[in-house]
Each structure stands twice: as C-alpha cells, then as structure tokens.
Length: 183
Image (cartoon, rainbow, N blue to C red; front, side, top):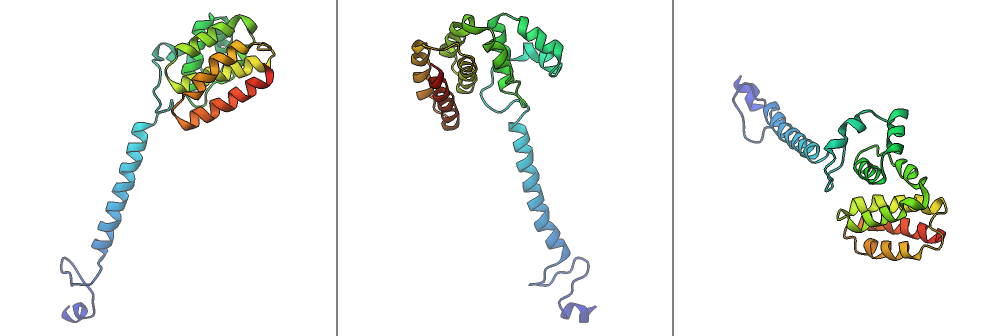
C-alpha cells in the first residue's frame, strides 16, 4: 500500500497533497450542480405561464382560460360587453400562448369600441397592458375604422412616449407607426 501511495495513488480516506481524488472531483461537480439547480429553481419561481410582469388580477377568468381555445369560449367572448372583453383580453396578453386574436374580435365591433379602448388605455397604468390595448387599436386601424381619427393618435402618442420599459415602448411605437399609416 505504501508503494501505491508513493506513486500518487490514494485509497480510502488517505489523501496525499497535490493528488486529485474522485472525492474531490465529485465535490467540485456537486457544487456546480447545486448552483445550476438553484438557478433553475429561482428561474421557475419567478416565471409562470403568465409572465413575471406586473400582472392584473385575473382570477375571475381562470375558468374561461381553462377551457382552452374552443369555439364555445370564442363565442362566449364575442357576447361579452366591451369592458369584460378588454379585461379578458388584457389578462390573456400575460399568458403564453396569448389569445391575441381576441384583438380582432374586439376590432370587428368597429367604431363603437374605439372610445372604450382609448379610455381604458388612458386609465391603464401597467405598460404591458397599455401595449396590449395599443395592439387592439392597430387591429381597429387595419380594418379601416380609424381613418381621420387624429384624436386617437393624440391620445396614444404621449402614452407610448412615456413608457419606461424599452422593449415595451419600442414594440408599442411600432404599433403606433402602423396605426399612423391608416389614420
């Protein structure tokens, strides 16, 4: 056994200076593994199906979203009053995959919903929700309902300009630029 130790080998709990043992290798890898697991758990703790953003209170719509994208759910959505549609749409915007096609359902209602969407946009304090509402206005503009509506542009522009989150502001600015093409 003494000869084996002299050649740099280690058995049991005996450890020679400068010799890397399986125990030391495992210990190093173990800490790296624990660090990776901790990072994964932290990531999972801060992310949900519905984003870490300042999410609106949407618990009352859990059953609605639990149905999944079905003809019945879409039919129900179309029959809700505009304020309920806006609430559900905004809540859905925070989920992946988001049912963004609801913006088209709202836009299909035409000019009658423009003031409701703009009013909600002006009251909304969450930038991501503001972005969702600006997207509805894009869909309304694409359908031709915002022609000549400079008042809508005047309402949207300062909201988009004051957004603090760079990505949200950039995306909202692109939406605003698209709306300008149709006004």
